Image (cartoon, rainbow, N blue to C red; front, side, top):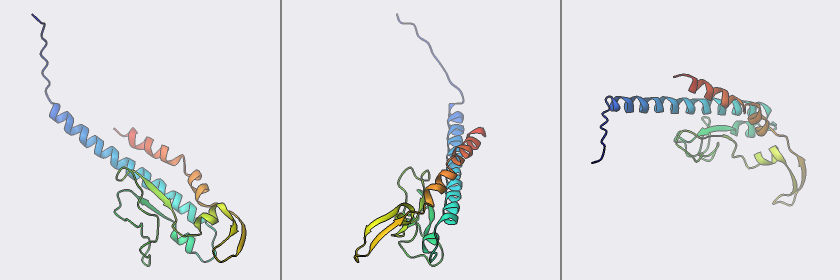
Length: 151
């Protein structure tokens, strides 16, 4: 004859309901933290971006994987391909800040070579996006600590 133990739990439905609510609240907090930091990086990048016509600066945008903006449009006169594209990842929990302007990478990293028209270039980079990211790199950790400190 085997020994038997019977366990009865009361309130499991209530506990599961509270856990789901807590999970939703924390997820929303994480999303807000990511967006807040992404917009700080965007602002800093725009301030540091080299300006000739203003096109590069205007194209810097932040998009998150829950916005529904497949093309990351920004501004009233934005064309379909303007802005940062839709980031891949968990819905709402990935943020991308950058530019889709063709010469944005050249401005950031520099360029040595010949373009499609045969013009020769030897440009040094003028970083704006990486410094903006590193300037606010620790902010996401601070923001997340605030979110998870709240119980």
